[in-house]
Length: 289
Image 1 (spheres, one colour):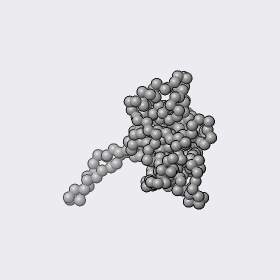
Image 2: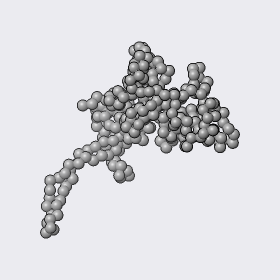
Image 3: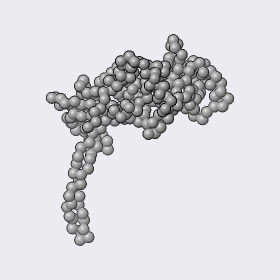
Image 4: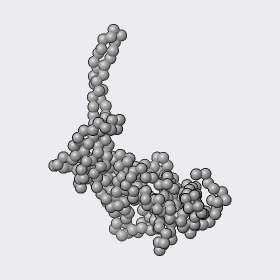
C-alpha cells in the first residue's frame, strides 16, 4: 500500500512554501491528493458522475487518499499561496465496483441471461464542509522526481536540518540536467509583454515596465481565486519564480521547461540586467508569438 507524503512536510524539508512545491509537481504532470484519515464523524460530500453533473446525491466520504480533480488542484495551489488550508468546495475523484447485466439475443429472438459483467464506475465528490483533519498529500515517487530546491534559487539552499545542499546541486547539475540561461519561450514572453504594453499605453515600454508586468501577471495568476484566470504573458507557465524589481540581490526569473511526460527537459534563469539588450535584439528580429 502506498504511503503518501504530507505536502506540508515535504515543503518543510525542502525549505520551500507548500504552494511552490505543489505547483512544481502539477507542472511536471503529477497529481495532488487529499488524505482522509479514520473519523468517528461522517464526512459530508455530494457525489455525481461527470456525464451527469446536475444529478447529485449525498455521500459519506470514507478514509483513504483520493486524487483531486484538475480544477481543484489549481484551487488548492492558489489557496496555499494565500496561506489558506481550507478544503470546503474541493472535488476529488473516486471509483466504485458495479455489476452490469448482459443479455444475448439468439436468432430465434430468444433472450438468454448471461453472467453479470464487473465494471468500475468513476465519479466525483465535492466536499461540502470544512474538515481540519483532511490534508493535501503527494505520491512519494513524484517527490523523488522534484529538482533539488537549490536549482530554483541562488544555487545554495539550506535543508530543514541546516545542512547545505550545494554539493547535491552540483552533482545533479552535472549528471542530469543542463542548466541554461534562457530559451526561445522566454523570448516570446518578453516580446508578448512588450507588444501588449506598447499597444495599451501607446508608447514603447521601458525594460523595467516589461519585467514588472510579467511579475504582476505571475503573482495575480498564482493568487487569484478564479480558476479561469491564466497567465496572459506566460500561457505555458514555465516561469517558476520571478523576483520583484528593487530586491537587494540580482533580480532574476527562474524557469522550468518540462516534457509532456513530466520530465524536466531544461531549466535556468534570466537576469533583469540582460533584458535591455534582449529587447533591442527582439525589435530587429521579432519571434513568432
